[in-house]
Length: 116
Image (cartoon, rainbow, N blue to C red; front, side):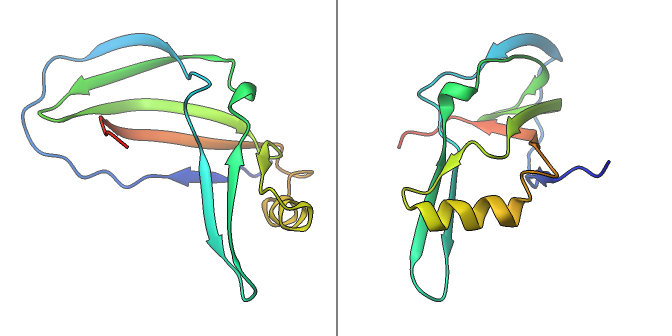
């Protein structure tokens, strides 16, 4: 079975502290958003964070201004996105082939603290 995987590129600097492992849970305040543009309009699809109930074990290194993850993988349901427009949501689910790939695997490479 093939897997659909999104990988985030890692850029980091020196200055690590020892490796730590901890269990984490993603809160409902977290967001996963896909922003896109078609030949007709722009769109934004948000993942239903209520579906994020699993606890994850993450091994990490603390760097100067960020946390470098080692093997931190999160699986989300590919049909958990809502684009606020029925046809766009249907098209996204078709593109993601949600019937063939029910999960999307996200590998966390680096976590940084940001204020939005």
